Image (cartoon, rainbow, N blue to C red; front, side, top):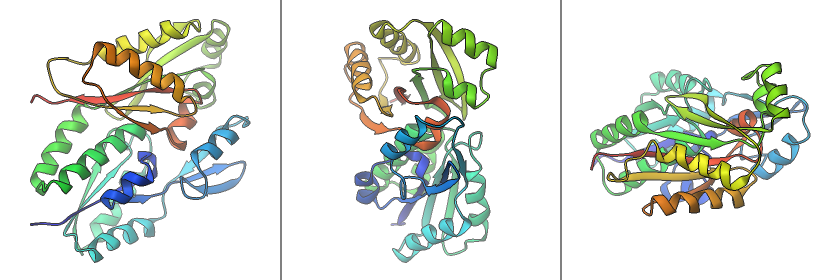
Length: 286
């Protein structure tokens, strides 16, 4: 049987318990804060990043992993006997990481390295990576893994509720006028990440928590067919309590939902800000 290895990047936001269990190699991006550079989730934790982000006037910057980190990760898996390696990365719309992986894979001859653009990020990428690892552990062939990724990437969506428009404005995703009006009206947007692109799904006025959670739940349920199997994961950055309230509301309408919770990392939190939470999901036909 062909031995399969898996590589992803730090934007997958997978906990160490998961990566250690399945032998997943994680390549860190670099995060720059106030002129200092950190390896994402290696030399700076999510908690430390959240604390610094709340005090910054300008958004942090992220840069691609060094090329040798890809080569070293692939070689570790080859040394462990892997013949096929899946290298699964953040959407090319959000980062050049997957293109960097492709360049390295082209010259890496010791294994069949299959580089995939996940067309998603954070909990979506982590979710795909973990589900792929579970299938590999169960004995899936490379052909079965390819078929799974084709279907899951096409169908996966993430919905997030944002606490404010601050980071969208700093990152240039909304104009100054829209930001000022939105702030005055206390607008809380729901974002969707689908097919590699982050866009505003809906804008809500006010801060009634029960109402905004209902709106987020409605948005997710509008994209789910309760008669079909659903894979779902929850995500949050510094507000686990609200994320749990949202999932409890979702479970009332979708009892089969029993998601893991993943903590949003530096890259997506930079764009959407603190106080965000939501869910990623996709459905299969059987």
